[in-house]
Length: 300
Image (cartoon, rainbow, N blue to C red; front, side, top):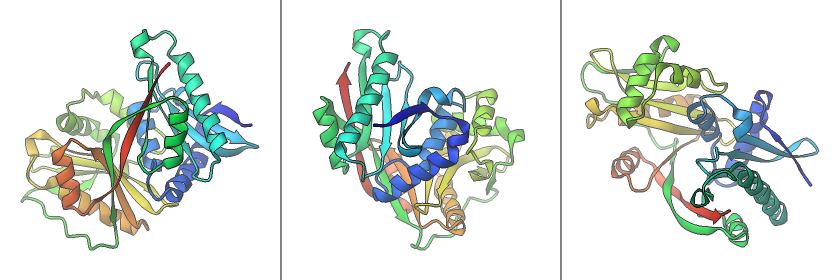
């Protein structure tokens, strides 16, 4: 019915085209190509991508794309086109589940709970997962959209601050510091160099607010999809020493101008539903809810 094989670096353009087509066809209520590139670069540091990303093909035509986590994480993501027939989608989910069952067989019994995350508007997949025995739980994320036709205000920064792109690997320590100071993750220079060297990552798209003392006070990365003509923000952060000064708001407005110049028509951002700071920030720059996520789990 279909062939399954691990991802290879030569597949990048093919995968980006397929995910972009699916994102557009689903009315922006699925995974943006930038989500995949962010996972490849940030989550896996560009390493062992053939273990975590898989292509499903019929006669060399890509019909589905999946991310399969490590056994400890116990989750997967399956991307299909909305025109995919129900029986085929059921088979694709079953195949992902079988791979993860084998991958998780050494986990303790209580760690063999497999999860996947979908849009609450994806009715066919909801039926598919329910029929496979998955149980639904409220999701933790909200995806929001903003039309780039809406006027974009001129960014306003405190005196002495300015915005630019990160210049390259020579600034890795500054980037690590702003990432750590924004999210508390214990990045190292070596780890972030792996991110920067992952195919598909563009250092020009990592925009930073530079403080008067030369530190990076805030940052974001934006990802462009020419098929859906949309730009994704992932991630967006502000160092704890510089918060509540409007830096990320100004940075997002500035990046939106770059999106417009690149031919994008919409901006996309996903955020945690229980994070009031993110909710307020994205609403303040014009983002509106497009869908909520649902989590589905099954005991294997």
